[in-house]
Length: 201
Image 1 (tube, rainbow, N blue to C red):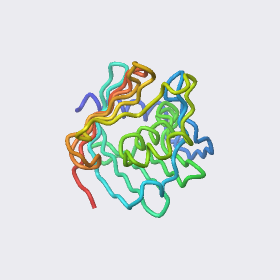
Image 2: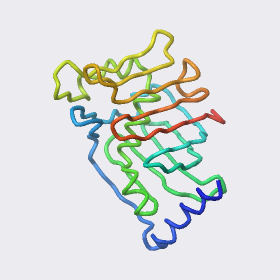
Image 3: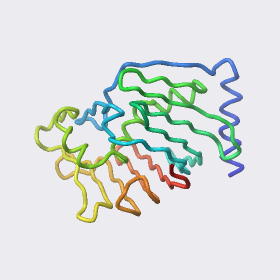
Image 4: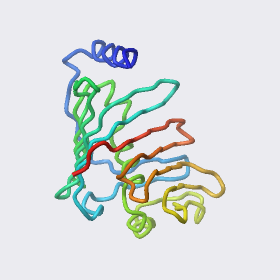
């Protein structure tokens, strides 16, 4: 844990306080793979209010990071706040269905790509019925008819596939995605996010 905190503190020192900024984007399109483009869904498509505190373990490029995510979905807005275990605020993202507003240290925000994190969130937490109902309107598949989102019979696994190739795999410890733990793996980008819900309102 000390090594993780040191790495992020070093990034912050390199960035310096002046690099803390606010960015806005109206781009809702996310390239999930070389053949699949996903347009973010409106926040109210989730269908209910949700307030979670989650421990996030992120593994990418051989590096491991542990953060706390505060997630709120309410009144047509998605808000994500990420902090270190010691309470240091790293970044925040607010998406109202029209604009993505991100605030944080520039090196981290640029590497993070907020709309990609929002896409990961929606693919993981949105009810599978909602994703399937809106799939054709929000997905562009260059291999026509080959891109699907599949769910296991018990509802504890989701797969985004392009033909026979797994692009994204999500495993859940419970039938409701927001309860317990989930493991999200993006096979083409080679990163994994492990989320454990520690508080739900």
